[in-house]
Image (tube, rainbow, N blue to C red; front, side):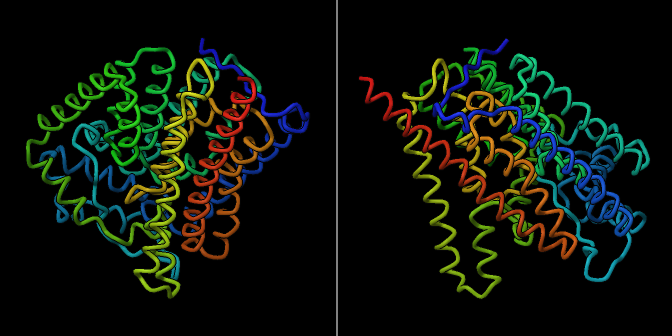
Length: 427
């Protein structure tokens, strides 16, 4: 069982999570669940499937068909993707003026080893395959969060926090779009768990699964390597070789060049609802700010995040004992969500397990408030704004998540500074 000792920042009783916080959180969870259900039915009734709901599964299902018909290297061919995605769009979506997205062939950014698990589902009809995918993701997500609740001793805070992670806007979008970020959450969670248990090699192997979306793991690998945890590095390199080797066996060298070519031609329009500094710059440009000024302002956001993160990593020896890994993961993932070139809201699911541990360690009102905002309140704002404009709601949500990740960094930085001052005063 994982030992996590709660840390109290203050003797003020207001800062400690009591029954009123649990009741408030459960109330927000209930409202969020009902809002998500109503929103999902609303979108399906108005727009059908595979145009908004299930849009990313449209890509996965088409890729499964292409892989078993033409080989894995063919999934990176835009012509094949258009040929196999178009019938799904035409058969299941509905055209609604000023709402429905026009058809465009989604590109696939995943190595063949991550495409292979979807191939069996492509033997099913499209709609049952989508329902099976969503159901499988729900079951595994709940099971994985239950595993973490057990690891955290069935604490009330852990129970409520796990419910908030499951109903987070990141997980909701991951489910209704048919995305793959559960792999990312498990990779981060197991890497974190094994580091906290001192099994560094196992942690590196698990983190190699993060190659499904490499922009979310690069800073993590860097910070662990700089702390000279060489067994972790060896495990990560070994896992990376397994991922790369399996992909080469499945798709050959053409699959690797296909991924590279696809990333080079990644559509700029996909950044509009993102959570990164580039998305912020795009929004500024769209509102009339000169492009180079907008890029400079976005770059300043990224620079501030990196400087705060670097200062935290430099002083992490003063963090909670016996292990600061939960804070390191949360701070690093929040930073990566800001500075990476591309990232959408559902990718923030990677922060779920580090958040779970940090809230369990430090269940004060401020930390709990930032967590609930990140997980639930941003989602409720999104649902409300979507009644006016779904496109505007996604753009707003991306920027709210960007601000939330900056707030997470500042919260952890504040906590670290307070610990440093306490440590200095005691010495």
